[in-house]
Length: 204
Image 1: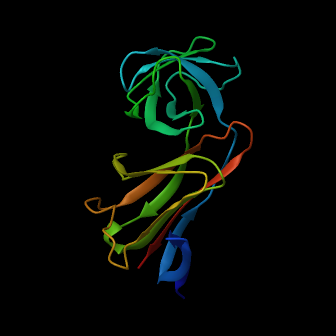
Image 2: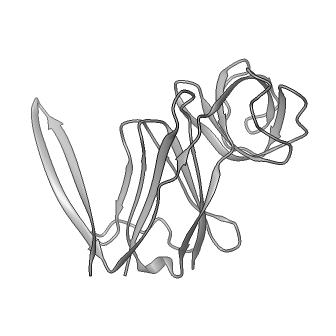
């Protein structure tokens, strides 16, 4: 039985609004939508480079530990990057290196999360017909990894706009060059409410 995804698009031009709907279907699907706990906050007190620095967290109960993987958001703006490695944590001091992205200016308020890893196994990325990333009303990041733990695709979504790639409809396959997928990391930037972050792929 075919598995469908229905995509609604709304476009406005010179005051006229056009709404279109398209259904993409394939033989099967991989779907993950974990609900993640609230993110935590801090200030970038040291900006050693565009990808490394030290955070002073707003609470000693921040829950970030030495050696964790960490995603970062500029508070109120959006994603700063993903995949940083946390150094030796001392109370509210959280040093980190290796962020994939660009940090904001020193003294910026930041939102942080240790991302949650979920299985996301697809044996051959050439079989993917569509890919979707969405967030339950928060900035979010999903990072897809191959079997060697290398990044196959990283996507950021906003509180109002998700990501849809219609490969079956001739969009370029964003996973091209990766033979297989194994897992995905999920994070979001909401400090008040636990949020669901969704990734899905249709496969033949």
